Amino acid sequence: MAISLCTFNVNSIRSRVALIERWLKEKRNIDILCFQEIKCEEERFPADVFESMGYRCAINGQKRLNGVAICSKLPLHDIKTGFDNEYLDRDSRLIQATIKETVILNCYVPRGGLEGSDPYLYKMRFYDALTAYTKTLLKNDKKVVLLGDFNVALEEKDLYDKEAFEGAVGFLPSEREKLKQLLSVGLTDCFRKVHPNEKAFTWWDYRNAAIWRNEGMRIDYILASESLCQNIESIDIDLWTRRRRTPTPSDHAPVVALFKEL
Image (spheres, rainbow, N blue to C red):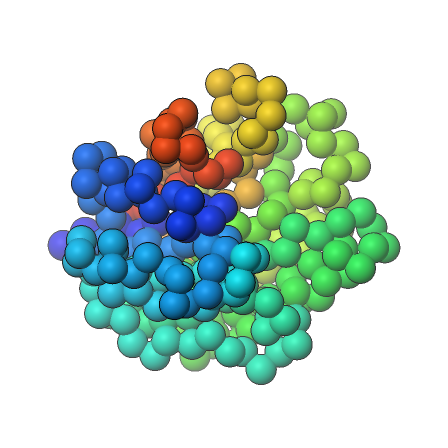
């Protein structure tokens, strides 16, 4: 039976829960939901809403900032929220669980800043730590999915206008190099595997009606080990939640992949 897997930066789960509930009930049946930027501690996460729809939730929360969660209709095993690394554990940005035989690693990479700034250095070191950890993970487990908000557009076709992002955070050459290094440990960008030339985005600024002008960036990814990528039936960016006026949407859209199996 095919399994659907979603990554979605919700920009506050409590502000978005009504929209997500409607999306799941009316538009999309998702087996595994991976949320980033939930912006709440575990006890304030609306787990009851998701449990009423058949999900079990694992949460790595933080007060008012960051936070990640995995909500799954399939059993979750070996849940992990601490990674014994000062950069991976500084904020609540990473959660891991095993579903069937696949390790799911849900990640919210720091936004960063201009080169040389403290936020920039944090982002660079976070990427280095994430790459090292993922490399080890791939050695021990044949099937790994690393997904989430990576806060980097990898190629020019991941931007609506290259000139608009020249020198901007999220498209700095050094940031793109870090994402390439992460991919090089044995991961494939699932969206690009299925849609090699499509210009599509996952984030749009709230200002200037950017969603309606389609002035966006693709910074949310589902990355998977090659054996899993061979099992992909489809992958798309679902714009329904982003094009809402009410309830207020996130500035990101979910990416949904359908795997033949995990």
